[in-house]
Length: 264
Image (cartoon, rainbow, N blue to C red; front, side, top):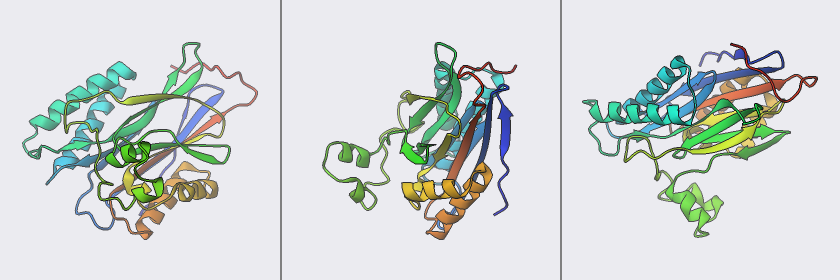
C-alpha cells in the first residue's frame, strides 16, 4: 500500500485542519463497496451493501452527490438531505442496482459554526459506520450505531462484549437507499487544539478495538501516517471487510480567541 498523503487547509490565521483518508478492499472481499470524501468542509465515509455491484453503486452515488454539494458551496443539514434524496434516486434508477437491500451507510462530519460564530463540527450518521473523537489522549465514540446489535445493547439484552460474535452483528436498521430516506442523526462538537476525528467503516472496527485505534493515534501524529498504520493493522488482523477511514486533526493557535473567521 502506498503512503497516504496528508492535506491541509487554513480556515483562518488561527485555525488549521489537516486530514488524510484511504480505502482498501481488504483480504476477503471481491470488490470494494466503501467510498469516502475528504474535502473541506466535509469528511464522510460510506459503506455500501447489496448483491452484485449494488453496494458499490450505492456508496459511490452517495459520495458523488455530496461532492457536488461541496462544489456548489453550501454544506448544511438541508443541503445534505437534498443531496441524499438525489443519491437515492440515482441508486434506484441504476440498472445494476437490482437488489432491494441495496444501500449504504453514511457517517462523518462537516466544519460548521455555532449561533455565536464559534467553529464547531456537525457530526452526521446513518448506519453503523462510526465517528470517534480523540481528545486529551482519550477516545470517545461520537456516533451511535443504527444496528440491531446496538438496540439489543441499549435494551440490556446483550453486553457490548457479546456484540462482535452476535449473529445479527451485520444487520443495520438505517441506510441510504435501502428504504425510505430518514434524516441523519446530528451531533455538534466544539473544536479544540489537538483534537482528532476518526471516521471509519466497520471494516476497521471489526479488526481494531477502540484501544487499538487510540494506540495508533498516539504513535502517529500525522493523519496520513495514522491512516496507513490503522489500515495495515486491520489487514494484518484479518481484513475481513473493506477498510476505510479518514483522520482529521485540528490545530488552533493558543493566542487566538475561540471564535475565528473563515477565509474566503
